[in-house]
Length: 167
Image 1 (spheres, rainbow, N blue to C red):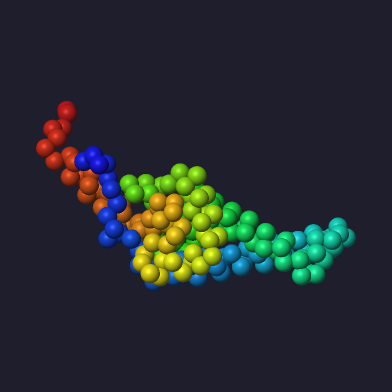
Image 2 (tube, rainbow, N blue to C red):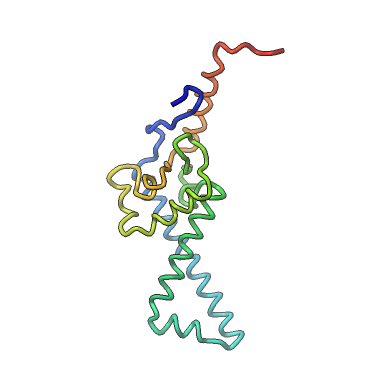
């Protein structure tokens, strides 16, 4: 470990309560997306007179619905956390997903994190601590954004002590 590299402090990790809020808000957003998508498919089927997809979904073809749900879930988390470093739930609580150096993870890491959410019972693994399986497997952390920004500023300001300014 180099003295010039910021390393995340575990005190910045958000609480299990905040993680629960993230989960609840994101589940609500997921259901809204599914309802909107279902409505669009229903309208398109009615307009174009093709009820084959709507009928297959209605005739208890759970496999199709599960595959669509999984795809939507992966797209939602990958896009939100890949572009913004946060999902809607994390925006509401002022949290952000980072790597061990407090930086935004790359797209591959975010995709891995999103895929790990498909592990059964993953949503409950953060209750035992503030990091869930999708955090530890992808080596990511969910931290308070303001606290992270302040901690990084202090770290970089501290590095400047004793450095002469060039004029």
